[in-house]
Length: 176
Image (cartoon, rainbow, N blue to C red; front, side, top):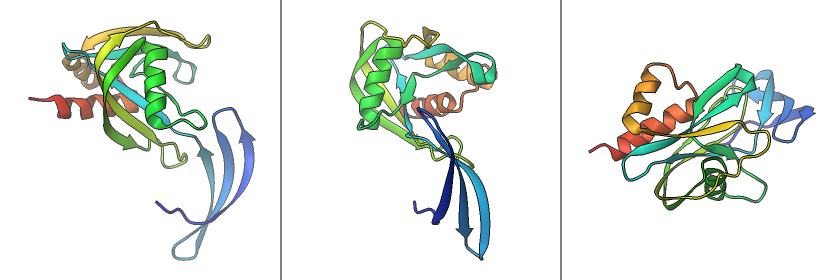
């Protein structure tokens, strides 16, 4: 996609994101100043075993004030492809390696103010290894039937958008 040319004034540069004010010329001679977050993107993994159990992690997220259910996921590192990120994150967060990978979808979680792109993958034919959590990650790994995870979405127990999207795409793909 092509975005209109913008003049950017950087406000903040962190280790993951940058925030800036961008003056944008839109069609119809409309000029806006927008607060835009630039993000390197991320990979999201729906790992499904032979019994159709899905790997979900329960992780503490300070921004929302508690533990939430999520799929394994992570930020794309410099010079890393989305699939390489997915493979690395699945092993680090869940202690799992997959022999079979499939593209599920590409999403923009918050396109009103952020350019982050998420790449969703289905991982199958799994081997269990050791988790390699970062010291700042408070993660529990759980394996639940896909149907149970979908019920949790409908009960509003799973509210993370990337997880909801990943579970729905996987259910559509694996449905008989």
